[in-house]
Structure formats: structure tokens, C-alpha cells
Image (tube, rainbow, N blue to C red):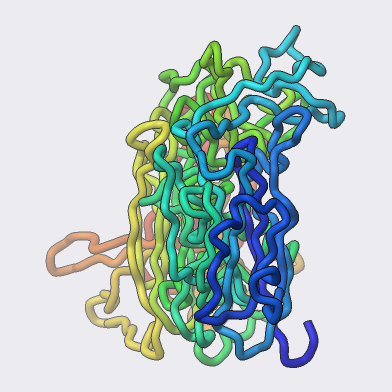
Length: 593
């Protein structure tokens, strides 16, 4: 945009238009006198300038309508926004949105019909996408069919919004009036009932500090709807350079220097001893920054779905969530027979599948006649798996700006459990700021379970910590002990490593067992109360061996530890087999230098 102007996006979601309708939306300057013409419904080529010659049009959508020959909507089954870039004066905060609907039926909406079941195949040919597969392959071109549904069966109401340069959406004076079927709306401005022309004032936020709504509010653990908000945010940020995610949490400076002024060092810790990180999802939101999602997240298309891998003909894909099926919405891989099947506690069930494309995941995944998910063409689905290389413990050192935050962990699978998994945030000393236990299982395949915690970052964060040298007790509950153990500096034999002042050199010898790739161990710093003879808490240190490697292998490592009480913890778990194999014929030996 030119100097003195700002960029806005006109976003549209026109799925589920009637075959008899043509819809065009305009954005103009605002004047209280602007009204939609009473006969606009009868004029297919209506424009605001017909009634108001002096109006300034900043942008408009193309004509949105169903294909005349095959009754196939141009935008059917597309969850992603169609965007029109607009340039408006920088000071503008009030605009008018004209959502014009033309109907060939005139003022009668009782006969409106909605096409169903058609789409394009990979070669661009018309076909019925949900036709049953043949010999394991996707269906070829078919004679287009035009089943129609009445107004009461409409599933989505066409809707629109305006997004500013920070990802915030404008607020309409007239909110959506839904159809008789109560079909949900994607955005906050709609033609009346999806069928009648409507003009409404749209108000942008007055300043960058004003609270606002964005894509980050469209789907969460409460809404649990069909919109892949994470995928949409990534698409808009990449495609139109409009920021969507909060920058309140950032990576540590590349030179490992201290965090910038106004921020504090934090550790984000994930512990999942019996299940991989692809069995659940997690994320941190900045309440102060409009509730935006930060870079601290591990999820699929929505924050309440895990990041799942699928394999089809030797090629790996990322499963697309949410998935519409069986009259509901699935947030994890689902059974090909339409219902989850029992399986081992931590392994994938053999018949679970996911969808390769968002456009397909957004459909109602059943054949309209058979109502079986197994009719989904194999060209768009694949079997879900769990990774064998998922870490059981993961730590990220980051910088967090002053403000309020929420931390959440979500489980979307009702059969495969994630018992004992936790997500945690600590300050620079490893003291607990937030700790959330991930639910072991979802309530059902369509109802994820989420636990949420809150924490804040301020100028005093991590400044009040002290350690009592007499009692050996910290002033806080530690979840992570970053300073108590370090990898020893490199040394050339026969010289030994030289630890920093105050640290003692230790050596670990590990001999893996018959299933060495699953052997793990870690050293925890123990806070022990000598008076009551009890362990107050134990915090992971960086001294550990992650799973991986070969059977019957010997490894030697050098470490630097501060004086204190410690525990050595060994475990062995195979997430693929669901079998505890133990450290038989293996072990760990610790000694001073």
C-alpha cells in the first residue's frame, strides 16, 4: 500500500451456497446513510455505486456461485479463506460491508436447493469424490450427479470479515442471523440467513493495544469445531504476511546471550515417559497479546489435535485435523469403520486412519447412501502410526515477555493412553511457574480432554530464588535443575575434562540391554529434608541418556555436577510394542573422576 495507507484483508467463506444464488461482497467507506437497496435481491449485477455514486469501493469478492452445468460450488469444502487485499487510509476504523445476494427465485427461499457430493479429482475431472474405491484405488471419472438438499439441511452459512495488519478481525454492527437449520457461520458477518442482501458497519480496533479477536479464537477446547485454526493462521501469515502468532515468547539469542530487556529466561519442559509426543498436543497462549498462540506448541491443524504421521505406499504424510465424520468432528485419527476399536495401551490401533488433504478432512466423510467411512477413496487417506523416535523428555530454553500466559495439554484419542505425560514451564532457576498433566485419554473420539494452567512473567520472575546451605532446601519447588549438571568440556586423553569452578567431575558408563534402543536414564537433583527424612521434590537435570542406539553397546560420558543429593532413574519402554523390556543384561555405573 502507498504511504498513508494500511493493508486490510477481505476474507470470505462461501461454502454451502444455494444453487439459485450469486453472492458478491463489497467493502466501502462508511456513511450512516448507506443502506442496501430493497430490490437488490433481484439485481444480479448490483453494486453500491448504483445507489450511492460517491461511494469509495476499497475491494470486492468475485461473483460467488455454484457451477451452472454441474451444480458444483466453486468454494465447496474449502476451509481456507479466499482473501482480497485492500488499501485504505491509515486512520480509517469504520467501513461498510455490502453482502449482496442475488436469487433467481426472487423473494421466495422455500425452494432453494443445495448440491451435495461432487468435487474434482486429481486430474481436474468432475467426479463423485465419495464413490466407493475400486481394487484399492480411488474412483475414476464418473457421471456427475446433482443430488440436492433443502434449506433446512444447510450445514454452513456463508460469512465474511475484515482482518487488519496485526491479524485482528473487524466487528460488525449486525451479527449473523442464522438459517432455520442453525448452520454455523465461519466469520461474524453474514447475509441475513445466508439468503438476503445485508449491509453492515464494520469497526476496526482503534489502536494496536486494543483487545481483538482473530483466527486464534475460532477453535479451542471449548468450541471444538471443524475449523483448523492453526493451519489457517499459518496460511495467512505465509501467504499475505499478516502476523498471526504471538511473539511474546521467542528463542534464546543465537549467541546464547541473556534475554533482551523486558523479557525473562524460561524453560519449557515436556515429560512423557510412557508415550511419545505425537500422542497428545500442547501449547502456550499469551493472554496479554490478545490470547494469541505462541511458538511454544506441538499440534496438528488445530491446537487440540496432535501432530500425527501417516504412511501410504512408503511415503509419509501429516494427518490433517479436524476431520468431519459420522455427524461429528474428529480431532485425532479415527477408525475406518466409523468407530474407535480397542487397542494396546500405548500403540496405534491397526485400523485407524487420517486424511491427507484439508479439503477432504473438511467434508462430511461418509458416502451419502452407505454411511460408512470405509468408502473414502484410498487416494486421500492413509494409516496412522506413532513414531518410535519420540523423546520422552524435552527441554527448550526461551525468552518470555512480561505478561500473562496459559499453558494447556490436550488428549484427543480415547483408546491409546498417555498416562503420566506433563507439560511444564519454569523460570531460569528451574522453579515451577506452571505444571499441567496431560489427560490420559479423551472423553471420546470427538471430545478431546484439555487441562489448563496459568502463569505470569514479570520483572521479579526468578529474582527471589535462594538456596539454604544449612538445610539444603530450595526456596521453590523445582521441576527442572538446569544448573546442577552439565556436559563436561572436551579433553584430549590422557587429560581429563576440567569442570567450571564449584562443579565436580563425574563419569557415567552405560551398557545397553538386549533392546538397547529403548533404554533411558536420567539423574535428578533431590531436595531432601534431613529433619523429616523425606524427599521434598526431585528435578530432572541435563544429565541423561535418551532412547536410541544399539543393543549391548557401551558408552562413556563425562559430566560436571554441583555438590548435592541426586538420584539415578532408569526405565525402558517401547511405545510400539507396548511391552516393558527392562534393562536385562544392561546397566549404568556412575563414579567420580
